[in-house]
Image 1: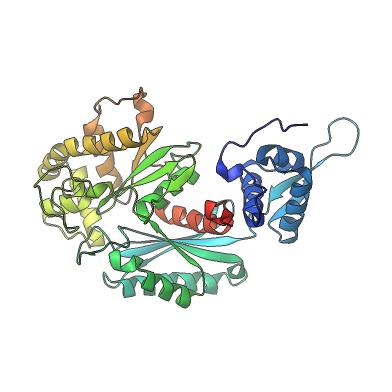
Image 2: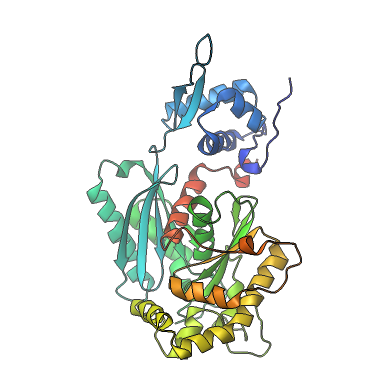
Length: 401
């Protein structure tokens, strides 16, 4: 008898390739996480794996305490069937968002529920200061929750890219190149005693919105991240897309003005020179590396300061360009606007930019642009999910023979 349902995506598709055992286990766990409690027969239908294979995989997952069996509701005569459900607290993961002023940390379980959060300010804008703040946060959780710490499987880190660039500019407040070097990540793994996964902050924010916020239930969307700089996180077919070198979505470095302002990346006329908190800070002569700057900008927006309003009005065409670029390249369901920039600043920017220029695809205005809903911790939440994905989610790389 053929399965009545076919796999909808790679993340829920099994394989019988040689050496694919780890992938199949991940596929089954992903189905249980997203669709459980679920019967083993249903898992077989969703994954296209044989019932015997599912029986064996579920048995091993149960032995590892990653899943548990529960009785179904009794309907009519006979014994109730058994369903498989996720043991949500079997594994925990850190998610830590690092910028040039502070580190924001969360700890989440397998189901993405946040069980702890904390913040640690950086003593300076250096990778050493960031490493120290991360170590302080991890130690703080370990000391306060010694019973839970053994279930921590890793640490997801999110920071502003680009990473692995050939000529990393120094002193650029919009990014944190030195923090994301392979050498620094190896040092962090050694210091923490945990596997470390690095993600671009915009991509992590997109993952966070997909799990907890405005992107929940969407397969294709972009997250336009307003931090000090400007970036975009891309979710395609339900999965984050980071690119070959982890720098996909660096929309802030798209050249929009030939011969324009010099950018620390080495080019001229990059988008974030005109549309970013850093650009506003330069206009207001405020330091981009100071936490107090964001509060100051929020206050200026609240009082409708003329300099800020004039800057926003001048930046609207660039905002329209950013939306146009993302829509034309991705044809995504929606673009979510968010980040660490003051909420009232983002709301005013969207309000003044509406209506947006026409799109090639027919879109309803209310769904075309959305405000982020996962909150200021969305990047840290996304970083935790990225770490969990690295350990448990299906991956193409696991199929290499």
